[in-house]
Structures are given as structure tokens and as C-alpha cells.
Image 1 (tube, rainbow, N blue to C red):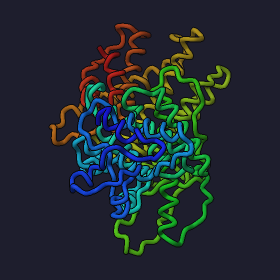
Image 2: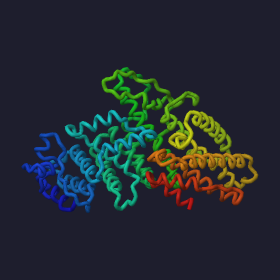
Image 3: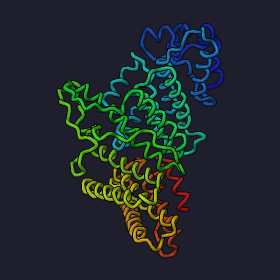
Image 4: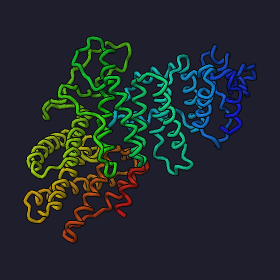
Length: 489
């Protein structure tokens, strides 16, 4: 796109007419009435209408969007833009600009992101995507753009990286939909993926604001309320399951973002989940054949005992709950109540970790999702008690602090051993995209090791090379790894 193409579609603001023909009419050498946002021929044939067909990349699609929206703001009497068609056109434009088929992006997303953050249920999304040609829907187009954003997020060089331009576009589209449309599940899902991208690209301040907007939309839609009703019809159950997944995704990502934001003192954006809130089920329970009659599977709630088997995403939510409690303890340390609170939380955390590690395979998988969040919670918990001992000048004389030193050393070595196992894998054996919680856990182990070195000096020795190699691999997907690599040196 170039300045001329933007001028062409915004020049006649009062008549809402573009100066140049759309791409389809131009290619077929047919007459075009140049109506915005879709010409008559494209509207009649239920196809996408794209006036931004110029290939120069001096101006981004988001700037074209800004001009289109400014036209409507500057002239309230002008016909309103068809937001649905506009967003679908933006999706097509982004696909062409990125030189990437969306099918490939979807495959990568559902293979590498979905396993540990399954907030977009594949079948309903694919059905809504297939309808875009004859039923344009802005929320679906934005969610598709957000998926593309997350998949391409690991590309280097922000100045020329097409994913960075897509990020600006997604942020603006997300903001516009919040202003012009009622809250929807796909809008919240888009916000979640934008927050995920921001966290992974080392923009946690922006991520904290985005996840807060997701929580606000979620509260408006009452996603946090699970009434416990049963569902005889599978489709009703499936819709309720997706709502629960989106809210638990907000809950989980909020705790992760909170951990990676330096000196972040604000409260969590989402409240703790109620004991009766039903946990997600395994993807294997989801229907793949639309014509297949499937009964709604039974759920376990947040209050289910830790020894009851659950799907891995449900374990992630339970782990995030423990991490959230550790974070609250870190914010509100009361020296008089710390021992009691610490012992209670430490006992539940160790009980959960023991059962979790029994249920999950060895190798890199032990640093994904629930395992990574659980190890992070353990690292932070024992650092709290050590830092309290330093603050109140009992370090070196406190048995509690000594116990935490031993525990912290053990957890650091556990993460190191997992990194060693992963680094020894051959290239085909390694997962293409490291889960974001794994990056956080590896980084927190590095920070804990640095803290131990500060306190113990030469008494504490740690080989940082396994952490460094793992973070170097992870930075292909998440720039957040650089934040920890800088500390390793």
C-alpha cells in the first residue's frame, strides 16, 4: 500500500466513493462503482472488496484504517462504514502482505499454541471462518489476524517485521470494535492473543493493559459466572465450555503477565475462580464430526482433590491459582503471619507438584504449561522467605531461611536438568515453538540463581549454560527470552 492508494479511497469523503476501482474489478477489467467499503459487484457476488491493492509497503494497513475511520469521524453525515466488510478486507490484505497462507498459520497455531492455551475451539472457529466470504464478520476477521500475529511473533527485527505491523493493525482494530460493537467471545479471544503476543515480545506493560480490557469485557459478558447447570444439548455445552476456557485463559495469562512485569504492584485483573467453577475438559472430549451425536462430558470443579485425574489445561489453571496465591503473599508480606501462610501454601504446592509430575512425561514436556507454572510458583515462594529473612536480618540464623535455601537450590537444579535434556534433543525432536510459561520458568530459575549468588557468594555455584541454550532457542518464538539472557551475560 502507498500514500496514493490511501488518498484514492478517502478523497471523496462526502460521497463515500473511492477514486480507483477495486482489485477484483480491475483484474477482471469490469466496471466498478467504487462504493465504500464494498463496490456493488463485490456485494452482489458476496466476495471481499479490496481497494488497497497497491503493493508498495511505505504505509501500513493500519494507516489506511485510520484514514477510513477519520473520514467517518470528520463527517458524521457520511454513510457509516460497513465494519464487517472492512475487517474482512483487512484480513485479506494482511494475508497478501505477509506472503503466507492462513492455512499454514492455523496449523501452526493449533499445533503449538493451542496445546497449552486452548482458548479458541477449533471447530466453531473454522466454521465461522468459512462463512466470511458470504457472511462477513469483523470479530472473526480480527481473531484470524490475531492468530496470524501470534504465529509470526518470533520473527526478528521489529522495524521490518511484518508481524509488528500486524500488531499495530490488530491493536487498532481491537480498539475500534470495543467502541463500535457489543462485547463478543471472539473479541475477547482476540484480546487474549494480543496480550499473549505483547507478553512474549517483551511488552508486559502493554500486555497488562490488554489483559485488563479482556477481563473487563469478560465481566460484562459474565464469563466469570458458571451456574453449574447441565446441558442436554451438545452445542449448548460446547458454547459454555468455550466461555469457560476464555475466562480461565484470562485468569492464567493474567498471572503469567503479573510475574514478568518488573515491580508490578497492581492487583490481579481477574478475581480468583469460585470453588464450583468447572474446569476445562480434555480436547479429546470435543466433537470433531458435526453430524455425530455426542453427550456433554462431565466436569470437575476447581475444588476437586488434587489426586483426581484432570486434563493438562485444567492442571495449568490449578497451577496458576497457586502462582496467584504466591504473588499475593509477595505483595502483602506480614512478618507475623508469614510462617503460617507460607507453611500452608508450601504444603499445598508440594502436594500438587508431586501429583502433577507423576502424571506428566519426562523431558521438555515437564517444562510446559502446568509444570512450568508450578515450578515458577515454588521458586518465587522460597525467594519470598529468603528475602524476608534478609530484610529482617535473620538470614544466616533462621532455620526457615536455611530450609528455603536448600529448596530453592533443588528447584533451580530441577529446571537446569530439564533444560539439559531439552538441549540434547536433535532438531526434529524439539518442539518448534516453546510455550511461554516455559520461558518464564527458565528465566525465573536464572534470576533465583543470581539471587543465591548474591547471598552466598562462592558457596553457590551454578552452570548457566543449559539455561542460556534453552533461552536462545526460545527467543525464536518469544523475545521475552532476551530479558533473561541479558542477565545471564
